View 1: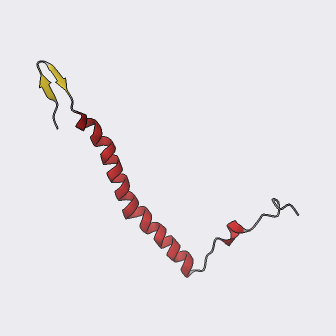
View 2 (view 1 turned 120 degrees about the vertical axis):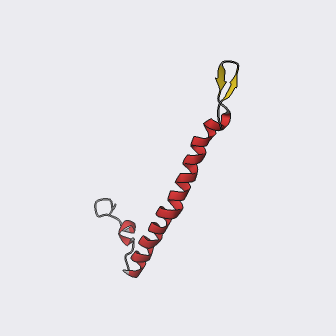
View 3 (view 1 turned 135 degrees about the horizontal axis):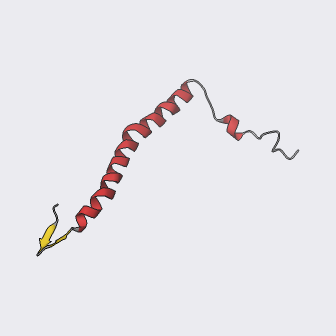
Length: 67
């Protein structure tokens, strides 16, 4: 939307200020759904197929055990 002219002064409409955040959110959502989610699914599928677990994160380290 173009700036409106009142006499010699130009006034920008509020729409110009809202387009940048809206465009950012739309592009971010597109990147998330097109790139990030499929990659997470592929990684999860690969881990299940190769029997990789996250059991290492559940085990306590010998240095942190209280015994």
